[in-house]
Image (cartoon, rainbow, N blue to C red):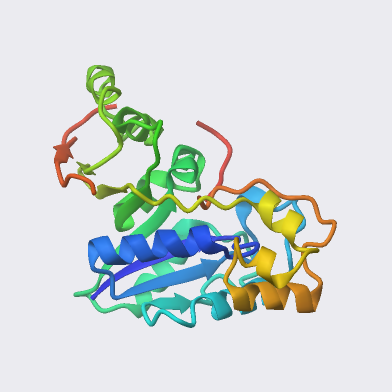
Length: 250
């Protein structure tokens, strides 16, 4: 079985998140996508998030219509910052050896992966699906890698001339690039619409989520927090044997 872990604050889950999950599931034949809201995201410990119970409830409503989508409590009530490597390992403990796990992530978040907690070990745990968008090259993806996995400067220079499509093979993992996801939603848009009608808010979130937001009076006069949850070839570029930041995120 093919599965993906899709983590984030999901504050709230919106149509952009669902578009990413749907595109990844369709392209890579995923049987399940685990939506894992973070209780204590390490990069947002000082920011005020909507209560976990609200964020999980909205995820359950948003994912109800697609049997491939699973709202998950993997990161709930751990009492510790939710580092991705721990989340991945908790999920893998529940899977069969024959299952194939992917880590689904937007390119903006991936660009900071070298600052995450144990990034080299995380990249060795499973393959990655990185949602790319115009303006990024394969060189950007390669340069974002931890130093121990980063391609040589000459290779990076060549990759900067290529769009972020296809896949990159590393010694311990393969990074698959997913393009063509054009649903762009921001927290600012959602908060601006939160005090308006369900119909207007439903432009950005599923209707049941919009109704929940209105019922619980969420996101009213609440400032937006920064967010990075946000037809291609199958050419595989091999960096096997390639040679050679630090706040800790992820």
